[in-house]
Image 1 (cartoon, helix red, strand yellow):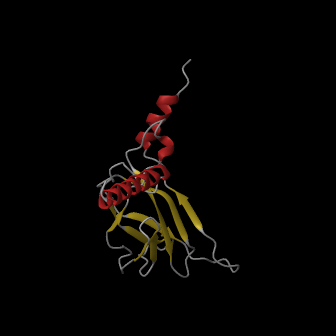
Image 2: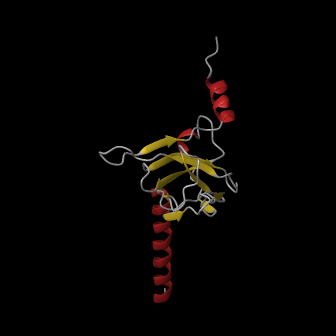
Length: 164
């Protein structure tokens, strides 16, 4: 066999093995990518209900920071749809989750976990209410978890309700 054929076969084998290792490790996926969702974040003062401009909004899943304008809104943000595989065997979800972190002096840092969006969805602005940090000890985080939709919770409760 000619040398170039041996090199080609060896390279092909290396590529296949590398792809299999990456698939198995989860670094790459053989599942089709879900279409991202579009969101805006609206930051409001929790007491005065006035828009908070200049707030820094971080979406860790995008690796980017966004800034609110004078109306308290960010520009539109494309967020990846990351599915929570914990529920695949119990009751699959048709949405994915992302995280919203908000920073603005003199307010308490804010974290919203499990923020939901469906593939391709344009979600109404997600309203964040921030409160001035009046603690002389320093900033303490304010964290919130967004629960699943009411319909999904009802389906879950019905599916697993004990009979009898």
